Amino acid sequence: MEGDICDLPGIIALKRKYKFYLYVDEAHSIGALGPTGRGVCEHWGVNPSDVEILMGTFTKSFGSIGGYVASSREMVAHLRMNAYASVYAETMAPALCQQIISALTIVMGEDGTDEGTPNWFFFNFLFISMSELNRSATHCSAGQQQRLHASRVEKAGVCDLR
Image 1 (spheres, rainbow, N blue to C red):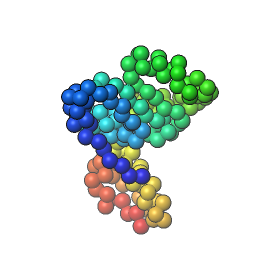
Image 2 (cartoon, helix red, strand yellow):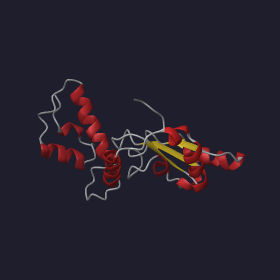
Image 3 (cartoon, rainbow, N blue to C red):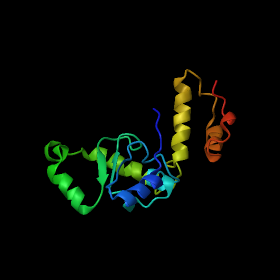
């Protein structure tokens, strides 16, 4: 999957000038962008309150189903009462809710590790991607993986992915 990162500070400047509402889809940035994985707002150093509606999914970085909308109380109340999915959909299973809570705990670093940092996600993506290219990842020891993670993937040559 490919994508572009919007110039959020520039869009917010336009929003202030032309007085429009801003809706940001964080489906691919939450858990992956920013120093702690909090998305495109953190990536740009923008206050999330400058965005009227932040929407994201729990399917990618969180390994579950569903999504979220972060907005004013009034907007969230309106969506709860009027959005088709909110009115007619089933509730999420407790195990899926726990998966989201656990993933958030990891992304926020509250589990005592740095496995939730965006660089850890990148390392896992790189490791899996290389494996999917029919390259053997078995030559990479746990120590090499730790060194690779510790250097934030800057020493990708440490691990022999033949």
